[in-house]
Image (cartoon, rainbow, N blue to C red; front, top):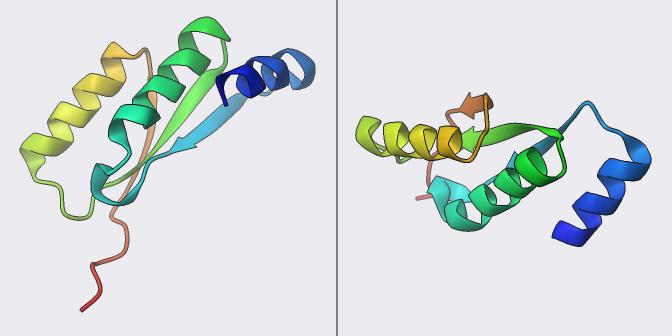
Length: 85
């Protein structure tokens, strides 16, 4: 995936890439790794697509701090779908 991002960023010169994470942050570590790679090594602005359902304010603050540490400055925070059941 990282090689593909490198190649696409050179060939297509996008304004930004949208990196979306899984339900309640289930893929947070991988999401931050991809976002950081695109932002720092490819020079492409990242829009982190963050779903907040099920997160406490403290958890949300931690995730936003992590995004900042990864170089991400653009966040689209959505409530997300409530759990089924």
